[in-house]
Length: 176
Image (cartoon, rainbow, N blue to C red):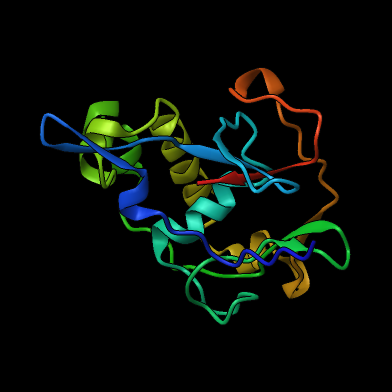
C-alpha cells in the first residue's frame, strides 16, 4: 500500500456544536492502514522540540526554513528516518516578559483561537513556547548553528491505553 498524506484538514467533519460553541469531536485519530478504519486516539507524546516548533508558528517566523518560509513545517525526513527541525528564524517578540507574567486565564483568552475548548495542556505548552522565544530570540544563531537543522533520531511512543480502539494490525497514527 502506498500512502501519501500531505495535509489533512477535517473541519466540519470533526466539529460538534454544544450550546452554540464549536467543539472538536476528537483531538486525534488513528488509521488502520490495512483496513482504512479511522478511530479516535490520544497522544501524550508530541515529539521533540515542541517549544521550538510552536515558537515558529506563534511568532509568524519563517525566513530561511526548509519550507520556503511559510506554511506548515515539514519535520520528518523519511529518507533518513529522522525528525529535522529548521533551520528557521523569527524576530524577537516584544514584551514577551509581560506575556509570561499574565495569568493562565488571560493567556487562554488572549492567545487561543477557541478558549472554551482548548485542551488542558494548551497554557503550559504556550508558557513553554513563550519562554523559548525569550531564551532564544534569534534561533538562527542560538538553535541552528551553521544554518543546520536540529536532527533527532526519534522513536514515536504511543501509549496504547490512551487509544480507544486496540488492534494487533499495523496502525498509522495521525495527530489532528
